[in-house]
Length: 175
Ligand SMILES: [Zn+2]
Image 1 (cartoon, protein in one colour):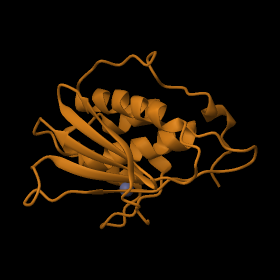
Image 2 (image 1 turned 180 degrees about the vertical axis):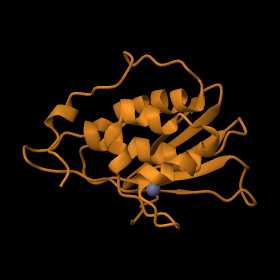
Image 3 (image 1 turned 120 degrees about the horizontal axis):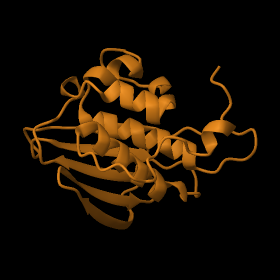
Image 4 (image 1 turned 45 degrees about the vertical axis):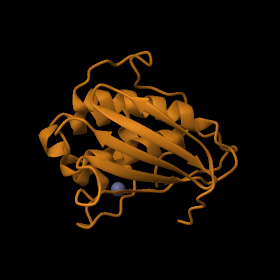
């Protein structure tokens, strides 16, 4: 994906277990996720699959280009938490971005980490923008944080106990 480095704005979000620095650039959101805890992979979070299946089942069918060539629903059982965060955010963005009737929408992202050059536990997540309509991002990020917190064990829930969002019903069945 082509990334313009022009930055419109940036902001930080701090939680007890990680911080997020979000750069809102012209053509992408660039998120620096820094985990404060040593929980860095879903292998140590055995409830991950069940939580996703309950709250965001469509993410399990997401396309994923990983080194092992595994479908995401398999990959998700043993992957880095940054990669998990990326996929949850991509899915909520797809579900919460308005699309014309009968249209479809797809976002793409990538997660990189280099714990020799960068802080151990940090992930760089890049989500490409696909149109000038960006209304869905704040809500998608808020839901992503809520679901991610549930998975990593910061059980704070709300966002009205999550699960259904209105567009689930409107989504066409996957082919
Ligand atoms: Zn992936």
